Length: 126
Image (cartoon, rainbow, N blue to C red; front, side, top):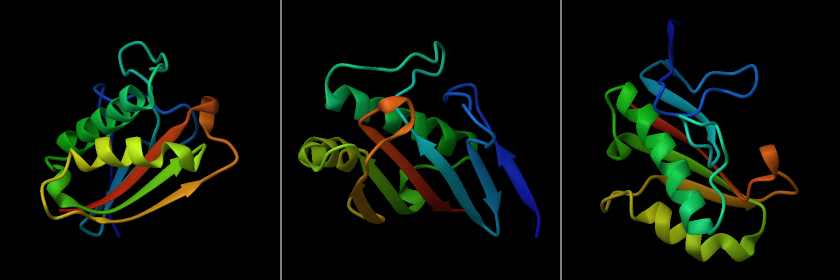
């Protein structure tokens, strides 16, 4: 199977041994994105709304680099530091999709990279 690495300067550079996304078998697997600003690599902090918008913008940049959009997303995973954040994150997340939402799970975890409050990964189809 052939795989193609997808990276863009419009999303944060990986902070470990992984790529922003891998295209394989007609599917794009996007690594979890946290609220890092791509040009400064600084965390966007403040409200969970601002943080979630930054995560979604990072995901959008990766999708765009692969000539795809949110309509191509078939699966998302949202990781939260606390389920109390669910409603606000859900509202922001939902605003990036039209009416054909992907499958999804949302889980609370003990910790996330750089102690952020939200991380989202996606799978899209070509």
